Length: 150
Image 1 (tube, rainbow, N blue to C red):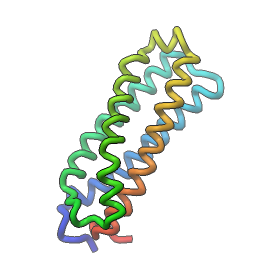
Image 2: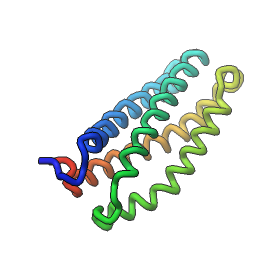
Image 3: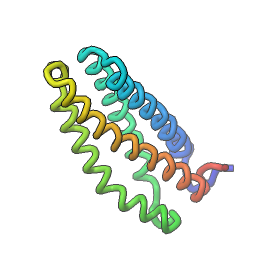
């Protein structure tokens, strides 16, 4: 049974965020595989990167809507700390992600595939780690606050 503390849109929001995380993880994995095995063309990589950027941008808007309705005082201490400590890290990751996207346009990827691969591996690993942390945090937070059942 869902808690009455959350509206239907917020309950759907938690599920939607986790679904987005699965999609983001899959996109990251596909992009990294294309860089490791036989590298895809700079154009194909650029298209994948643009698609990932769109998914992430949409996800961040939805995530922001859900997060703003989460009252920190009802979270258990460990999750409240995780939530608060993660804000600064998320802001830095957003800035770094934006810089990465601004820099690595198709012609720069074509000119420096090895530099792009190194930069992509670094930022995508950070992004993947963040997604995994958020998935665990959102899921456990939703369970602990009664917004979803086990």
